[in-house]
Structure formats: C-alpha cells, structure tokens
Amino acid sequence: MAEPVKVDVINRLNRNLGLLHAGGQVTIDIVTPAGKKGKFRTTFIGYLPKQYVLVQFPDPNRLGAFAQYISQGTNITVRGLIEGHEGAVVAFVSKVRQTLQIPSRIMVLEFPKTVSLQSLRSTIRIDTDIQSKIKVKQDYWQAAIKDLSVKGCQLYIANGDSLLINKGEEVHIVIEQFHSKSNVKLGAEICNVKPQVDGLSIGVQFSKNDKDKILELLSLALVAEL
Image (cartoon, rainbow, N blue to C red):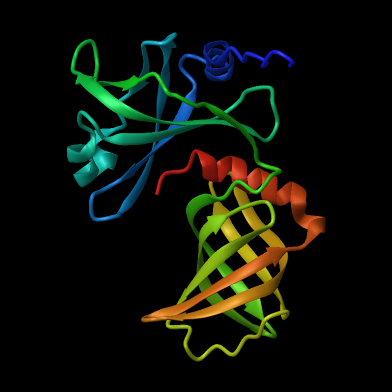
C-alpha cells in the first residue's frame, strides 16, 4: 500500500500569511451576538509562526459600539489583498487572544488553523453597502448593493414594492461614486426577486463584458468599511 502523502500544514499557513506584508491594509469582520455585522479597515502588523498574529486595533471612532466585542475569545475574520497578485485575497478566521494598549492598541490573534488564498475571479462574495441606481425599462430606482461577487450581486430597493420586475429581465446598474471609481455602469439580468417588509431584494447576474469593472469594484469593496 502506498504511503500517505504528508502535507506540511504549518509551512503552507506561513506561506499564505507571508503574502500579507507588514504595514499593509486589511479588513476585519466582526459579528455581534445579535448577528449585526461590521467591517473595518486596519493594518496588518505581522505574525510569529505557530504562535500568534498581530493586527492594529481599528480606529475607535469608526468602531463605535463594535469596540466592546473585540475581546478575548471573539472570532475575527481578516482579509487582505495581495500586492503583486491581481485579484487575489488572503483570508483567515481567528480568535482574539488578548488586546494590548502599549505601544499602541493591538489585537493579538491566535495563529489560524487555516489560511485561504482566494481569487476574486472565483465565487468569493463580499458584503458591501454600495449606493447605486438600477435602471428598469426607462425608470431609475435608488438601490444599495448589499453583497458582490464577480458573477452577480444582491440589490436592496427601499420602498420598491411598486416596482414590477421579472426574472430574466435585463437591467442596468449605475454606481455614481465608490471610492476612486465614478459613473460605473454594469449590465445585468434579474435572477430572483424577493419582497421584503420595507422594500425589495433583487439578485442579478452581471454581463460577462463587464468583468474587468467588477474585479476593480471587488478590490475596492474588500477594503471598504461597512
């Protein structure tokens, strides 16, 4: 019987974590016990193999009430774009071991058990809150893009209960301003329509012709705060 192939897990974890540069920008995702999500931009400091990971505490003014949940035992998701690797993301989930006050506010995270290397060109889906407009026939409706992937997105239209729209219908999405991007226009097709208590949730699939624009948006959305 052939010997099982041994995979050096620690070396692979170190290799993937090593793609994040000290001083580079990352985002952390926090979920409160009530299920509320927050995403905040901060700085990756570094790591000690098999021991811990150091991440700068986000700006307390931006954290607001989320600050109370960054404490020992809290699960934190960390994501960062890889410099020199277009459309690639390092991501891992880890527990907060402790927080430090000196020399600055720092989160000490447990060394992760898995570190994934993801491509924005795959099915990775990122939570967002991008203000946009959706053109249905000749009318424009204010909408918010609630999540985004290279293939499609979920739109929320407040007070959209009077909007008549069907699966398979072609629409256009306009993002007037999002970070460094302005007047971004995307073609899409309706995949599903779900009435909500105070609005309408719409799932769309993007036109393949707009893939480069979407990848640029994904790169920006990854480091944007919610």
